[in-house]
Each structure stands twice: as C-alpha cells, then as structure tokens.
Length: 258
Length: 299
Image 1 (cartoon, rainbow over the protein chains, first blue to last red):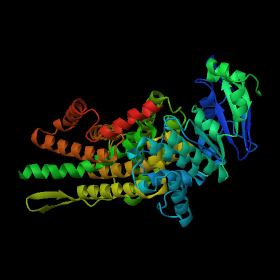
Image 2 (cartoon, rainbow over the protein chains, first blue to last red):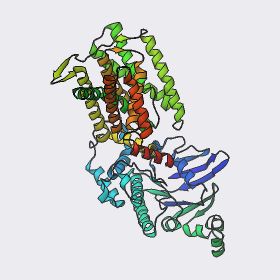
Image 3 (cartoon, one colour):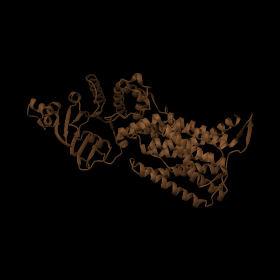
Image 4 (cartoon, each protein chain N blue to C red):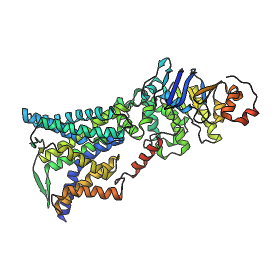
C-alpha cells in the first residue's frame, strides 16, 4: 500500500528524517510513535507533499509520489487530518464534508454549475453516513467555526474519510482527549478501516495506539528504532529507553524484537 | 437638504463602480493573501485595446465593449502567471513588487499603443438626463448602478451556489487544507484572476463610458479608488468592499459639492486615514482580521 524507501528530510543541518524505510500493508492500522521531535509529523508531511524529501522516495500503491502536489496525492487516495484542526470555518458542517467528498473529481474544475447539480441521492446518503460516523447529524447546517473543540475534531476526521481515501493519515487525532473520547475515536478508526481504508496513525497517546493498531514503528531522531506488534514494541528495551523513559525500562522485561 | 440627497444619490451611483473595483482587490487578497497592484493597470490595458481597435478600425461600440472585457481577462491571467504563479507562495513582498513592475509594463504597452494623452471613449451607454421631482438623474450613472447590482448579484450566486464558488471559499479559508482535500488551488487562483478581471472590465467600462475619455492614468486612478474602497470596508471582506465603495462615492460627492472639485480626491485620502486610525480593520474587517491572525498562527 505505502512504501517509504530511504526517506530523508533535512532542515538545514537537522536530520528530521534519516533514511527511513517503512512498508504499510493494505487494510491494516499502522501506528507510528516516537518522542517529541522524533520525525513523526515530518513523515506525514513528506508523505502528503507539504514539503519535498531530501532523499529517498514515497511509493503509494506502486506509484511514485515524489514531486506531486497535495491535491494529486489526494486523488491518488491519500487523505490526512491535521494535528491542529484546519476546517473551513465559514462553511457549514455539511459543506465541509461535501467539498472533501467531491474532491477526487475536483469540484473547482466541475466548474460553474449550480451546487446541487450532480449531487445525487448517493452523495447525500454518503454524507449522512459520515455525519453519523462523526456523531454530528444534528449539526449539519452549523458553521464549522461554531462547533465545540471535540466536534471540530470529529468533523476533521469525517472530512478526511469523506474523500474516500485508500490510506488515511491521522496526525495526533487524540491530543487533548479524555478516555471516553479516545474509546469513541478507536471505534471510528476501526469502522473506517472495516470499510476498506488503510490507516496510518501518528500519535502520542499510548492508550489509543496500543488499543487500536496492529503494527507499530517507533522513531527516534529520524531513525526507526523498533518495529513490531504493540506488545513486542512495549517490551523492546530500546523503545523503553528512548520513549517510555528509564522507569519503564526498569519495570519491563528485557527482550523484544527490533 | 435637496442638495444633500442629490449628492448622496450621485455618490451611491458612482460609488457602485468603486465597489466593483474594491471587490476585485478583495477577492484576490482573500484567495492569495497578497495585494495585486497591477489590477488597475489590467483594466486600463483592456480599455486601451478596445479604444485602439476603435481608433484604427472604427469598429462599433459593442465590439469595443467585448474587446475590453476579453483583453482585461487576458491581462489578468498574464498578471497571475507572471506575478503570482511564478513567485513562491510565501514570498509575499516579491509578488507585490512584481505586480507593481507589471503595472508599469502594462502602462508602457498602453502608451505605445496610443501615444496621445487622451482619446475619446466609444460608449454604448445612452447619454442624457431626466428630472424626478427636484432631483436630476443621469442615464449613464443609472446604467452604471444597474451593471454593478447585476455583477454583485451574479458574484454572490457564483460564490454561494456553485461548486467553483465553494472551492474558492474553501481556498480563502485555508489554502493548505483545500489542497489536501483535493482542490487544485492553482486552478482556483487562475480562475479567480480571470473572474475579477471580468468584474474589473465591467467596472472600467462603466466608468470610462461615463467619462467618455480614456487616459493611461486610468490604471493609477482605478488602483487608488479600488484600494481605498477596499481598505475602508476591510480587506478580504466582500460586503465590506461594497460598503467601502459606496461610502467612498458618497463622501467624494459631498466633498465635491460643498468644498469644490479639487477636494474630491483629497477627501478620499482623509477618509482612508481617519478609518485606518480609528478602525484599522476597516468598517467590516474585524472578523476577517481575526481569521487572518488565526491563519498566521496556524502556519
């Protein structure tokens, strides 16, 4: 599904990513974790085309993504959410989803036709499902700017799902959430995956990562230091030292796979 | 009292074309977050192309009008390619300076096209005036107002009822998010330039048809009026641009009547200065400015 080959990104002298290799299989929920500044967000940003890689390549479904602008990557099937929410504040909830849902064909180019033209029962049905997924059915005509923080997060998630991606990149979707909200989010992530979407989850919140992912890669200083199932990663000494801190390293058993 | 009402009505009618100019500036600012200083010059060049055809080939006024609209749109696309597409998005100053350079360049082209200072402008408008009670109305000003109302209504429909309009608003809100949602932001921007050039072409035509003459200074004039009206209303706000244009027109009309012709332009600058000191965001700009700050914080 997604293959990163020797991916590097340097900012001046800082090697935010250093020859990262990573393969994500179709249909899995893949976790990418690491301490602050380990290169997680840089990875997502390079995959999405925010900035070009210094070296290496991004292959998505066998296709080379290097040098393609974000909107083309989305049309190839890569959608993302943002760590700090970036909705369209003066569009309604419904319109936010509608923009994203139409984007594989690009609404801008469908041009100067009235908005309802071509808005079939199926698109309305799909938006209704997305609203239900985000638990925002009662707010569909509300401006996005007027939503509460938690609701904005849910809309951001649904908007990314609305683009019918093949691979959904979630950039710290659980930041600032309580336990109940994290449970809801896990449910949502699984539901999206069950509808045929592969998920790459970049996250700090261990409760979510350990509960929902099937495989995890751990980054530190732009390198991959560990790789495996959640329980393997938790037992890995290098991870415990780098990420969970020394106290966790003392508490846990020593072996693990790397 | 009658004078006051008469001036106000005249001001609103002429202000409607200021509003169209301000809309052009404000839409580009909303989409690009940059000022397009060459906007007035693109309109002037379009007007010159039409006048040139008229002077050399004596084509009729309708062909002149069509030529002006077409050439303004082409000039607008030219500006987008040279000043905004070519320059990186974060190079705000570079694109502003290059739009200034293009302004000078377009002015040169116009002067070479028609080297004399002024030319009569072939108008489609019916000239004349009629009285309604104590008030006098000029037919070409009513035409101007009608054109402006039609343009604003059409723009409103476009922005709020079409797919392109939705995409344009999404790009105004957050160009990055729009890109990740699959909107081709460059295409949206190119179309926005063509669109505002069309609006500007109509405004320019209405103004020149009322003046019945065209000079190379029209570019400078249109840039001043449009910028002042936009700043009055608040950058990036469409209702603000309309309000700013009308206020500017009314203030100028009163200044001209009560203080004399030479105070007309001066009053516009005084008004702009007062607004910028008392209400720096413009009359309707507070909300927009707030979002602007947010946008910068997000980056």
